Length: 171
Image 1 (spheres, rainbow, N blue to C red):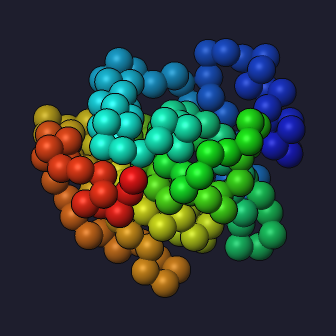
Image 2: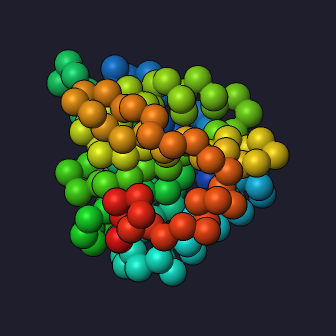
């Protein structure tokens, strides 16, 4: 299956999101819930108010993820921050991505915290944040060191929102 095939599937089914790993494993995801969307919106507003240009931030946009063995996958992070504006497209390259944020939904824990973490590291994305939907909405911030992510901070979302994006290498 190719990214073009996946795009056609998504166009025919507006009730689900589809992703594909670089190895060809297809995932069918339900639309995010209300709490998930509110977390994404709060982070997006924080980034924009903190000086990250709006055209450098996107919710739920497709990224073309190169695999270690030459395959190409397509992932749809909850939020993406780029170093510069991107051309329009369904599956955008990762070359200018500085941060991806995944908000963990019930059932996506393994994919968000293990699979995507490995794929984003292999794609050399400098930062990867994971937000749990626990009571504190815990954010774990990972920074790429070599070819692996290292957790550099874990804190409640409320604390993150009281900082500035440039304190985290963004903006």
